[in-house]
Length: 123
Image 1 (cartoon, helix red, strand yellow):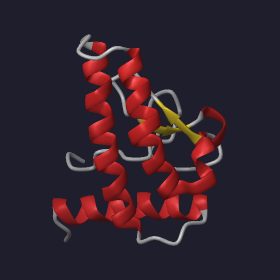
Image 2 (tube, rainbow, N blue to C red; image 1 turned 135 degrees about the vertical axis):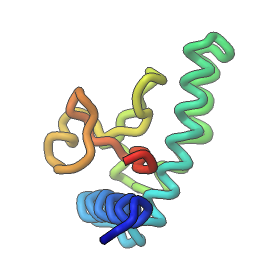
Image 3 (cartoon, rainbow, N blue to C red; image 1 turned 90 degrees about the vertical axis):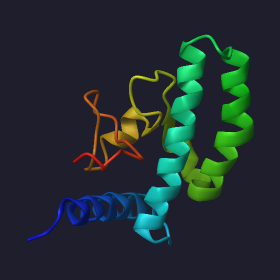
């Protein structure tokens, strides 16, 4: 019988492998998920600050272009064109765009977008 932590890591591994396969990447799936999860957490905090009025749209654009985008380009290369950055802090920030989300089977939000870095800790 597996523990909750083992099941969580199995889900992370499966999700990471889905991303690796989809983008044709050469990276260990759990390591990829950890990188993406850190980016998701930081990006979501920026979007919360934007929603709360602590930063303006220029601040979000500055973060996206100077911090987030280069990190995503390093991970995904040309595949970055498939990524949608959601500015609504009530959901996940890093997603595949609508068209690409239809092409991949995996963790999706209610809108059908494939989530790049879901939180599996509570599942």
